[in-house]
Image (cartoon, rainbow, N blue to C red; front, top):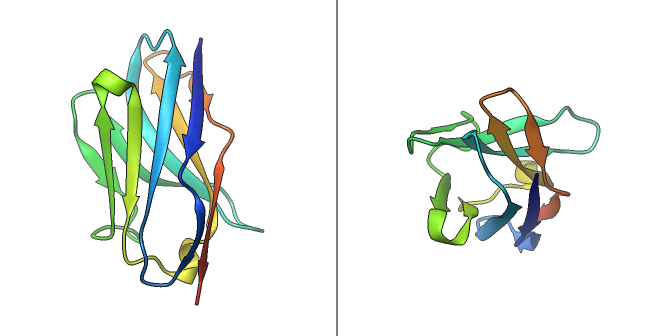
Length: 116
């Protein structure tokens, strides 16, 4: 079992930055990808960024060039550096670990609010 705990969310003005962290505990066997998702009020959850076990990254078009996903294997932590934040980035951000067996682990989410 893997437990994921996100942190780093908060209130920031447009143009500001935040760094989200997702710390994993437990037996993280068979993880093939680590993702950040977000869900805004009244909208479906969407994938924001992905980093694979091989280190490849991919981003949603809406955040490309502004967000960066990274990981620290020694700390069992995945990060999401968010720069040039916009009001439309306001959402609950979730960390997700995806396994080779198609099972997903989820964190509880952290709120990001960007004021205009």
